[in-house]
Amino acid sequence: MIGPDELSQLVRHALAAAGLPEREPAFERPRQREHGDWATNVALALAKPVGKSPREIAQLILDHLPTHESVAAVELAGPGFLNFRLAHGALQQIVRTAIQAGEAWGRSTSAAMGAVNVEFVSANPTGPLHVGAGRWAAAGDSIAALFAASGWQVTREYYLNDAGNQMELFTDSVRAVATGQPVPENGYQGSYIAELAAEMNAAGVKAADSAEESYQRTRARIANTLDRFGVQYDVWFSERELHQSGAIERAVERLKAGGWVDEDEGALFLRTTAFGDDKDRVLIRSDGRPTYFAADCAYMLSKAERGAERAIYLLGADHHGYVKRLQAVAQALGLPDGWLEVIIGQLVNLFRAGEVVKMSKRTGEMVTFDELIDEVGTDAARYTFLRTSLDVTLDFDIAEVVRQERENPVYYVQYSHARIAGILRTATEKGLQPGELADAQLELLTHATEQELIRRISALPETVAYAAAERAPHKVARYAEDLAEGFHRFYTECQVVGEDVELSRARYWLVMATKQTLVNALALLGVSAPDRM
Image 1 (tube, rainbow, N blue to C red):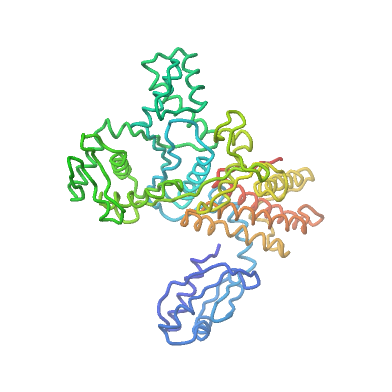
Image 2 (image 1 turned 90 degrees about the horizontal axis):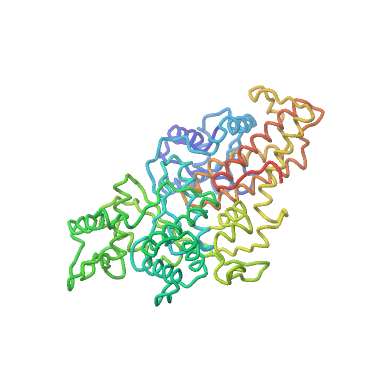
């Protein structure tokens, strides 16, 4: 299958043959289909260094461009663009490639990229996950899937803040309710505290064991919620381990050795202002106790020591102030440039038929992530969370998400797959024998909607590559909708099983290629592709 890499080789050959400077041409899809399948502006980029007009340079490239069986035509357009139109044979090969690659279609076939640690959600184990955590769960899991599709060895990780004052307040609150005592000042008051206390009393948990038991039960609930959502972590990392193993002390010593630690009135500070932070951060208090920030430093070092060649932190908008200090830690620890990447996601506003939803019907408190899954289902929740860029605040309307209408994107995309499955069942029922893919007369796929559908199928690899590079799962969701729309046009105008047996066989394989492509796109979002709806 010819793509930008192969077209780039043709253009570089032409540059050399025309005596023009060497340049790596960039290719993109023209916005208008009549402008071809691929376009490059390399002539415009060379105009200044060469001292010729872009159109003159483009004509020189065109005059020296070698022929290729997969390229039907190359046209000079506008101020100096070169538009490439693929031959019909190249389109046929896309159908074969998509089917033969199967689950690997759209994934990178390049060499392994290295090890990346993707940490996401990491909510404190002091209560149930809220709706906003659902967005981080969907995004983190999909970003990890995109990394894996691009050749990275991925570790999905959850960081448990299970040490410090908040955990003590939480466990003290549960113990107080369980024993009929007043909740501590600034303690946790939610109904889930009473539920947890009742569970522990029913199980006969002793007061001495209540702290650990309340923590373990809450951690298990978080894990269960995420499991329901289709998210499985490779590592659940406990902050306690950093304290118990001496990792915090080792991290502080490494920072001292780098010359980045100062002492003031018995406390140790990391000089994060040297790296652009607004103030220096306390590592060790004057009484010798490490801060949360010291644990953050040790945790980052732990990721590096465990083999991460890149670390992704997915944080909510309320953590925007953490970015500079995390970057400062990475630099002070001497980690390579680009090792750390912090992604900030915006918040979620919950609506029902346009009305703001702030409280749970069951408890009168916040709506939990579990309740949202109960109401709309995993697929609808994941797709809705992922369809919008993380840079944008998401308005999640429950009534809209569960509508079984074409205007509902997740229903539209999943229904498209169900219709595809139905077409394939009908083909079998009508006795169509598709034969071998290698023998299919795909050259018969000349209808405009057939060719357009193939072009959309062909865009999966570049969509995955772009979405991975930009950490943008929403690009895959929008691609799935575009593919579904192309399929519906094809299905409306072309009868798959008709009197022409060879044409029916060719269309059968086109439908199969569409099915595989849609399944693969949805898999990157963690969304199922149902055969019936």
